[in-house]
Length: 138
Image (tube, rainbow, N blue to C red; front, side):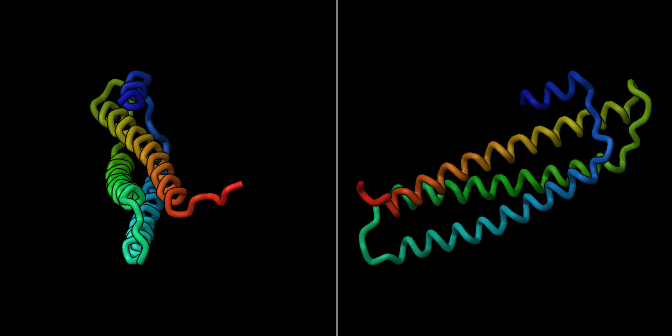
C-alpha cells in the first residue's frame, strides 16, 4: 500500500511498461515451475518410511500457497502493464494521465508484493530443508 501511495503522490508513469510485462510473465512462469517442484518435494517427503514431523510438511504447504499467490500477483501485474501500454500518456492533469498514474502505481505495488512473497517462500523452504536434513553435529 505504501508503494502505491508513494507512486500516486509523486505521479510516476512508466515510460515503457512492455518491459515490465515481460518481467511479470517470466516471474509467473517461474512460480508455476516452483509449484510443481514443491509439490513433488512434499510427495517425496510424505512417502518416506520414517516418521517425519509435520513441520516440514506444513512449511511446504504454506510455501505452495505463497507460490500460487505470487503467480497470481505476476499475472495481475502483467495484465495491468498490458493495459498501461495501450493508454496514451498525455499531458499531466488529463484523465488518461491519471489512469496511467494509477495503473503504474498498482503495477509497482504488485511487483513489490511479489518480491516480498518470494522472500517468505525462500524462508519457508529453507526452514523445511533444515528440519528434514539437519546439519551434522560438530
